[in-house]
Length: 327
Image 1 (cartoon, rainbow, N blue to C red):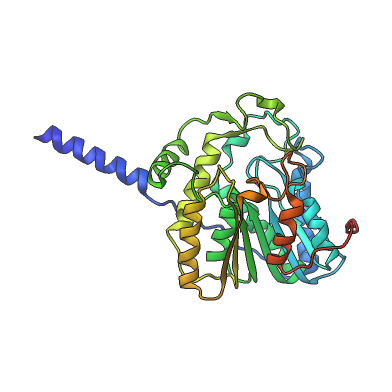
Image 2 (image 1 turned 90 degrees about the vertical axis):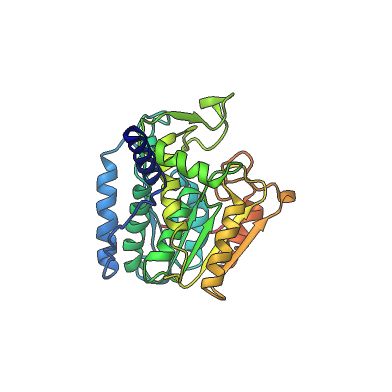
C-alpha cells in the first residue's frame, strides 16, 4: 500500500512538473530620450562586435537622426536573424518612421552549423523584444511591434504585459505545433526544454544544402523550439485585457509549422476581452504563402502578396517603386 502511495505521489509530482505554466518577467528599462536610445543601441553594437556574426546577423537601427512620430520594433524568426526584416524596415523607414531590429541571443552566427543556437530560450526571445522596446521608447512617440513565428509569441507576451505599445502585429505565431494535440505538445515541450539539446533539419533530404537565405540556420534545436512553446503556454494562460492598444494577427492557410486552429481560438478570446481592438487575417491556400511571410530571400517567398497586407496592418501605405535606403 505504501509503495502505491509513493508511486501515486511521484506521478502527481511529474504531472505538476509537466503542466505547470512557467513564469516570465523581463523588467522594462525604456530610454528617456533619443540620445539615451542611441546609447542603448551602441551598447548592443559593442556587445555584438565581439561575436562571430555573419554580415546580416547584427542588430539594426534605421533612424532619421531625431525622434519621430512612429517607431517600429521588428522581431525576426527563431532560426533567422535581423536581415530577414531589412527590406520591410526600409519601407517603414521611407514612410518617415524610425526602426529597430534587435537580434535574438545566438542568432546570426557566421557558422550556420553552430552548436549553441538550440540553447535559445523563451526568456531570450522576451529579452530581444524588451531591448527593442527600450530603445524604441526614445526613438518615437508611437511604438508598434511586429514579430514572426517564435518571436511573435514574445510580441504577444508584450501586448499582454507591457505598457506604452500602440499596436502589436503577430505573424505566423508559433503557439503550438501543427498536426499534434496541444496537451501532447505542451508535455513534450516541458520535457525537451529541460533535457540535452539535439538538432532537427528543416529539410531532412537536403540538410545544410537546403535552399534559403544564406544567413538563416538550416536546422533548429529541440530545446529552443520547446522553450518557445513554454513561453506560448504562458501567453495562452493569461488571455485578458491587453496593455497594447491593438493586436493584429496574420496567419497563412498553407502553414504546416504553427497550429492555426489554436491561434484562431486565442484570437477569439482576445477579441472577446478587448472589443474592437483585435483583428485576424489568414492568407488563403490559393496564395501559396509560406510560414515565413516576411523574408524576400526565401525560395518560396510571396512578399509581393504579403507586404501590402502587413503594411496595411501596420498603418503604413505600400510604396510605389523602390524605397530609399536608410542612412
